[in-house]
Length: 441
Image (cartoon, one colour):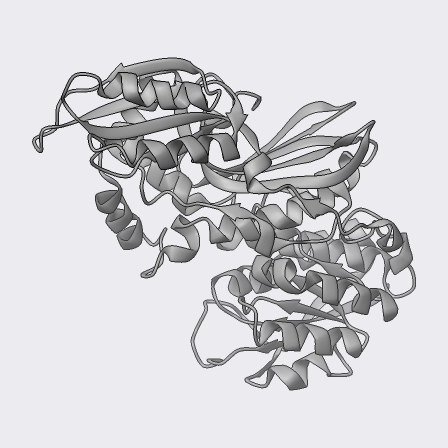
């Protein structure tokens, strides 16, 4: 029986989970693989801390460079996170002929187009299932299970922190700031939550999903991104009254004519989804990815999107995939992004102004005659029609909330109308714009 020797970079929460599986599930893995996967080395800044693991026989060090170049390591697992020094270590491992598995969505989104060709040139594999959706095998499903389909759309709840906050706000009628504080106390949110709540984490993951779905290059910097920090309990209540639930979604769609895709739409923002839809039922810290194809129609993948055990499970699944074909058969694995590298294209990103959507608008206006007529007149000037309009109870500051749902229009039309609306003397605050998606399953 042959053996695959694993070196692990980072023994934090996820690293501990990976080490635990490699040690405790070794017999099960051997039965599935017909070969042994063995953890031989771990590098971490703090190797003295007790993780509750029996690491007998595992070499512990604080020198990551030494690990990624070691002769007794066949596969390097990178669980440091962030852009650097993770990129440097992964590139060094690939240069030295090591396979790599990572859970680092930021690394893949920012540097994947540099690392994939390097791995191919060295005839080694790079796996990153855990980078999107934690324990949900959504990348494998998209790359392999849906490979016979032209993908028509991808929708994702890709950040458990945001989903937890929005679920709490809805269930308890609580304000964003209060729920965020609770999420931080429970460990769901970081002390600086910007990366999660402003949609950056979701944008990293969406850029990977979009590139895999449509055979395009990863373009994280071109994802339209908005977070959830402006959502109020009143907005969630208003959406519910209209039959919708608010979720932070990553959305990707192809555009082109006669079946030829030449542009990709990528956006992350709080989204109204129909209350009866499956994706609306995904609550708390769970993630979900909906992939729709021309033959398979709608498929939905739901599970824990983060945490030690689910993420470690996805990391080890990648290790096992590579172990099945190593050392000679890496070419038999599906390409990392699901398309032969020579066939991947640098597709254009659809300009934000050209996105077509339905919208939820919330305005705070002075309670005086003619205000609503002025607002609806401006919308009509820009060919924007309304599906619903409601006036809420007056606030203590004497402002009146007006909530509107529009029919489909372009982002450019809407923004032109909003620029005129906010110039009206009766409009007291910036207009809150949320987008609505009725096509989710």
